[in-house]
Image (cartoon, rainbow, N blue to C red; front, side, top):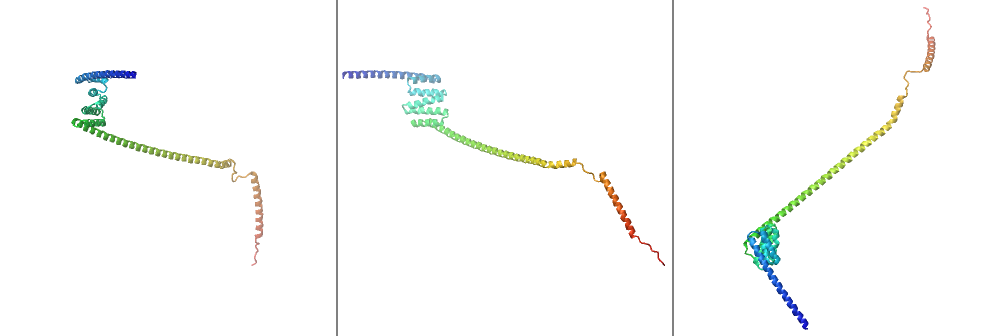
Length: 278
């Protein structure tokens, strides 16, 4: 039992010593941080903003939640036109500030840095938070009105750009549809022309085939005519010697028969002239 008590007492002594040492170290670091902030402020007054920023960062390394160091670092970065880097420092300062006035100042400067980066919605929110902590700050109220005006213009511009984009997309779509229709029409007309041409070619082929068939049908006649032309024709009035001989003999016989008939007729029809007695 006594052993357990002794161990507990020893543990408490060690813990107390550690706590005291930590407190001493924390106090020492805070002193060093405050010293670095004072150096930074002197550099800031001389408008040596880059050197001032280094001093404030060293202060934050000693005490990361030292709100004065983060706030002053934000101011130095802002004056050096490093607005994006200044923004998180103001946010940290507003988060760690112990009084409303310091919070109001941090939010006010946060709104200013967001205005410089054209984050108008963020600026409006920051100025509103500043006024919640210090409603009597007319400068913040004026900045809020300006930020709201810029925000409305931005929304209107985005709406106009969207409308213009939609109109452009619709025009492009209409043009594309029209081009496709014209393309289909041209293709259809081309197909019709092709079909018509193919039809004409078919008719031409049919005509040529018909002519060839016709020629083939006419070929025998041409051959007959050719044969008839080549075959010798008997000339009219021209008789062979044998036919002439037969014809002469026939004419001679006919002439004899006719002479004989004429003589017989003359004899039969002759009147005897009688002398009269008066």
